[in-house]
Structure formats: structure tokens, C-alpha cells
Length: 380
Ligand code: FAD
Ligand code: UDP
Image 1 (cartoon, rainbow, N blue to C red):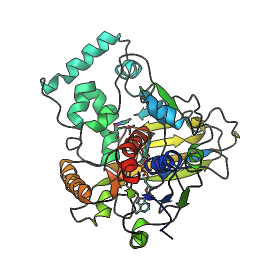
Image 2: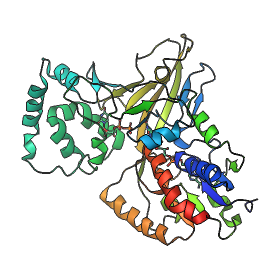
Image 3: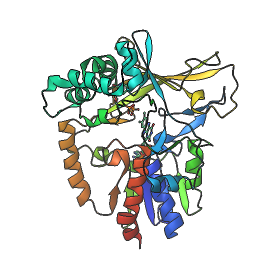
Image 4: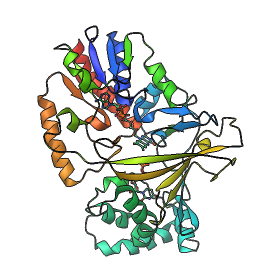
């Protein structure tokens, strides 16, 4: 039944789980959390591969990192973190380079020893083609940051595979996620807090949702049960916002990824967790090798699990992963945002509900904020 709850939450990812945890543990109210998938965790869900025992993030590699002390302390109530520090390498024309682009990448690519200032001067010279103009899109932004030769080697082909969209139509925000460093520091993230959950991602959600005031119903699509939800019960909706309004203002565009998982009979396939493939003639964007995310675990050394990622446009039947966010998408989203503001009793949140690329820590921060400013007032 749907009548014994103080709030209904749609989606058991980080946004929905954080709201559920707060409502139960902080307000002592009854929560019904539903998800159409057959597991909790949303896209952060992981499970141990049966054959090898290796933890596999089922919706792509999930690296936890944050600059936000509040979020870090919050999540540390539900898990300990390992001291994993993410590093990525990129294969280009038969060579392997460190990503993001740093002094090591620059020296190796141009085949000589540069000091930080020499490397800056070289890139500044190569970025001069913009003539001081403000970059307007991903391509111009990348050229302004690293110059054309490095852009063409490491960004253009990868971005073409990842987005299949002209890089001059993509927002520069996609590329500013990647730092550029004039030191030999080859860590992927700049954040002070980073690590992977000691007992895996799913255990975090089990603990967040452990209060008996939270009832979790899996394999349940909100739109199949919506009619049974009594009037006046607040709803937190973290599914796709265009679906909520039956696509009446048009469809928001997403990229999806096909994950091709293989178990190989080698102890170590690539020597690192993530190898990007920069060249366009390789059809996948990257290969993940999951054993390397948890070097502290004593995994067997006969077999390894790898996943190749193939990126493509999402149809309605696919899992939406990356908002494309062209100028047209932004306009469409604004129309839905206006509709959402008029929809009384429903709070829209999360990556799908606000059509935004959110890292896990940002989804949690947004949920903590929404709890205080929207959910708490609605329930007290
Ligand atoms: P989600 O996790 O997507 O949860 C939404 C839930 O709502 C889903 O479980 C869905 O099934 C459910 N739902 C939707 N519609 C309905 C419906 N009609 N009825 C019932 N349930 C419904 N973040 C990082 O910090 N680090 C990373 O390294 C990282 N890597 C990523 C890699 C990939 C490939 C992707 C796609 C994302 C990555 N992220 C990463 C982002 C991370 O997954 C998100 O920040 C997080 O999932 C956001 O949580 P959410 O609750 O907003 O959405
Ligand atoms: N990117 C690239 N080459 C790389 C890695 C990233 O061109 O080797 C670009 C690409 O456009 C990508 C964006 O930088 O979409 C952001 O990269 P990130 O690693 O954050 O992507 P994610 O892990 O979210 O897929």
C-alpha cells in the first residue's frame, strides 16, 4: 500500500538515498523509497563478480572525490574510505601518456625536457590562434588551455567518440572538469578528499537505508504506481524530468554507454585501473580493469575483469548517463524547470531530475541542501 508513508522518494541513487536517510534519522518520519531497477545505489551500484570476486561498478567507474568537508564527513558515517588515488593513462599512436595533461605528458609528447615556464610559454604560443578571444565552446576552450597539438592528440578523437557531437557545439564545462598541470603531478583529481569505499559502494546504501522507518521497493516504476499515491503526500522525484511531464516540451538529449565486460585469464591486463584510448580508430573510449581500484584486497591472481566502454546517443529505452546540454537542450530544460516549479508537492532533484552532470559528492550536497530548504519544511 502507499498510504503509510510521510514521503515518497523516487530513485535510490545518492540523491534519493540521502533524502531518505535524513527524513528517517533526523525527522523520524516514514519513507517509501522506490526504484524501477532491482537494486539500490542508482548509478553508483557495484557488485562482486561471481567468477573472480572482483568488485565491479556496474554503471562505469565511480571514483569518490570531493572538496566539500561537509559531504566527506557525512559519507564517512556510512563507510570508511581506502587511500586510493585515481590516475589515468591515455594510449595514443602506440604510446602511453599520463592524463590529465601535465608536465610529464608535455615532455613525453614533444620529446624533450621542459621546465614549467618553458612548457607554459610553448602552450601559450600554440594557444595564440584564438587572438585573445574568449573561448566559446569545448574546442576553443581546450585550445586555450593546451594548444592545438595536444588537443588534437588527446582530446579531439576521444571527445569525438564520447560525444559524437561537433566539439564546437559542446559546452566548455565538459573540458574544464579536466585539470591541466605544469608539474609532474599526475593525479586525476585536485580534491583534498578522495578514496574508495572499503566495503564497496552498495554497502554505503545499505547503511544509509538501514532505518526501519525506510521501506524500499525495488522493481517499481513510479509511473505505474503514481495513481495509487494519496493526495498531499510529498514526492521527491529523481527520475528524468522530461519523462515526468510526458515529454511535452520535447526530449532532453543524453549520451549512454554500452559496457562490454570480459573475464580474462591473466593476472593483470593493463597494469592500471583506467586506460583511455585517444585515437578515433579504436572504437571504445576506455578500458577499465577493476582489480586495480582495490589493490588493498587480496584478489586471486589468475583472472581479471575488464570493461570496454562504447559511447552512443541514448534513446528513451536506454540508461541516460551524460546530459549533452547543447543550447537547444538548455532551452528545453528551462521549459521543464518552469513546469516543475508549478508542480505542487513534488521536489525534483538529482542528475536526471535537474538535467545536470553531477558527481556523487555534488548529488549528495544538493540533497543535503534540498532536505533543509524543501523537504524539512514540507514535513514539519
Ligand atoms: P542516479 O544514481 O541516476 O539515481 C536515479 C535513480 O532513479 C536510478 O536508480 C533510477 O533507476 C531511478 N529512477 C528513474 N526513473 C524512475 C522511475 N520512473 N521510477 C522509479 N525509479 C526511477 N560521480 C563521481 O563522483 N565520480 C565518478 O567517477 C563518476 N563516474 C560516473 C561514470 C558514469 C558512466 C556515470 C553515468 C556517472 C558517473 N558519476 C560519477 C556520477 C554519479 O553516478 C552521479 O553523481 C550519481 O549517480 C547521482 O545520483 P542521483 O541519485 O542523482 O542519480
Ligand atoms: N577527455 C578527453 N580525453 C581524455 C579524457 C577526457 O578528451 O583522455 C574529455 C572528453 O570530452 C570527456 C571530458 O574530457 O568527455 C571529461 O572527462 P572525464 O574523464 O571527466 O569524463 P567522465 O569520466 O565523466 O566520463
